[in-house]
Image (tube, rainbow, N blue to C red):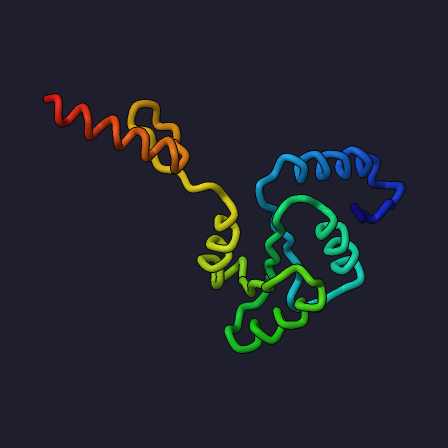
Length: 139
């Protein structure tokens, strides 16, 4: 993973290691780039690194406040080969719904477990519904 190895950043090796561990455990990762700065060499290096990981990575292009120019700013990031660049504005909140959809798409679907406030997988939810239906018929 590429980080600026400035001597003043004494924790950089630990930060780098923690990022690698987090990516290993993640179901999905988010790469955020600066739409106003355009695609930089550092963006390219990090995208190259992310493509070698086993985790799905979603690309968010921040600082895209205007819908018209935001799409143009985001288009510059297709060159990273990370899939659809999602134009967003952290300040204004635009594009966040679409970004959340992209982030949650690779996650397993779950439904609330009434007994524990935990979550069921799709298969567990079907089994729980079947049991609930059986219990309802017995009453």
